Amino acid sequence: MTTNTISYQRHRFPAEIISHAVWLYHRFCLSFREVEELLAERGITLTYETVRQWCQKFGPEYAKKLKKRQGRLGDTWHLDEVFVSIQGEQQYLWRAVDQDGDTIDILVQRRRNKQAAVRFFRRLLKGQGHEPRWLITDKLKSYGAAHREVMPTVKHSNMVYANNRVEVSHQPTRQQEYHMRGFSSSQQAQQFLTLHGLTSNLFRLGRHLMQAINYRLLRTQAFQVWEESVCA
Picture 1 (cartoon, rainbow, N blue to C red):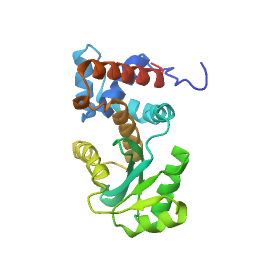
Picture 2: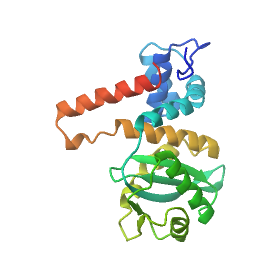
Picture 3: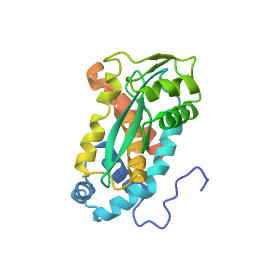
């Protein structure tokens, strides 16, 4: 087995079942118990705690594989931050999406000051490998300060309503956060939301914009990319 292959050694269940359980949890708004029930209907008997451990162990590895397959996204970056409550403490989820609504990256931080914005900007540049053509944010002053320091040549807009695309992208996170009754830690939130965003990018195909035959073809390709990425 090569170093680029995810190891499923010492696990009672095969890779197909493990990866399918992780996919169900991150693709849909499900709890661990609901994933357990769906698998039980297929004759696969396990506990919800097993599903939780699989997501915790294999989730970061899946995210790395999917991110490599994803490559570069669009050249217009919409940035926004939203607060999340973690163990009673208010923290901030920084999110960037491109002009197509695909999640570029997310970062959970305790602050939303200039230092936090600069850290997020540098993370985006490192992940994408290039500067965007447009940077669209709200009127938070931290964005302007970070923009002047990190990528001053990039066009920056903070017009009203221009950032609706990324604000809408927070909705699935809010739904999952409510379903999970909050995140247990910033690390858990970071791991879950990273894979959640990458999975959404892969399977969010815009069904209303294409004919059924094209949608089914793209969906089949998405499943193929998933299986190749998780080595199932």
